[in-house]
Image 1 (spheres, one colour):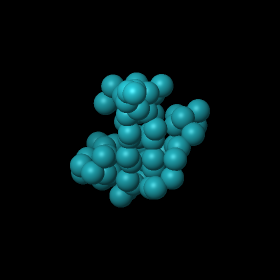
Image 2 (image 1 turned 135 degrees about the vertical axis):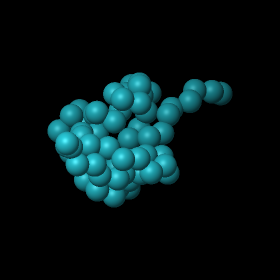
Image 3 (image 1 turned 60 degrees about the horizontal axis):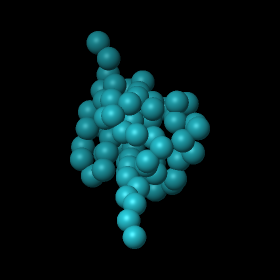
Image 4 (image 1 turned 45 degrees about the vertical axis):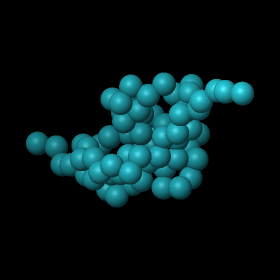
Length: 70
């Protein structure tokens, strides 16, 4: 049995496996990496490193989609 941790994703509380990476969350939620900015605990994340970022209990993730217009 895997232990769960709690994170906040765009303001919503989620329970995830304690060995999850930021990449797992992005993939599971079908988020297009090329069209978003990702913030972890109020710091912008380098998308090249998301596979190596392990999430911890009470982490706060904000994912913002880019929208074109003019």
